[in-house]
Amino acid sequence: MSESETVRWTLTVSKETDIALRTFLAQRGLKKGDLSRFVEDAVRWQVFQRTVQDARARNAGVPAKEINAAVEDALASVRTERFRAAG
Image 1 (cartoon, rainbow, N blue to C red):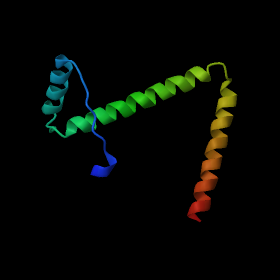
Image 2 (cartoon, one colour):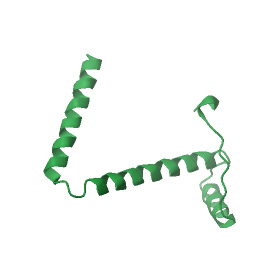
Image 3 (cartoon, rainbow, N blue to C red):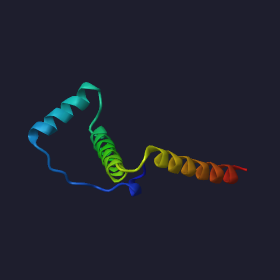
C-alpha cells in the first residue's frame, strides 16, 4: 500500500484494550506498524460480517431454490465476462 492510498485515523480505545492488543501483537513478534494492519483487518472483517448478516436478514423469507438460482445466474454472468475478457 503506497502512502497516497492511506489515510490517518485518530482512534480512542480503553487502556485495557490498548494493553491487550499491544501484548497480543508483541507475543507474535509483530511491530508497531502491524497495529495499523491489525485494525484494518479487523474493520474489514466486521464490515464483511455485518454485510453478510444484513443479506441474510433481507433474504430470510426467500426460498433456498430462488437464492441458489440467483447465485448460479450471477456466477454464469461473471464467468462469461471473464472468459470473454481473457479470450
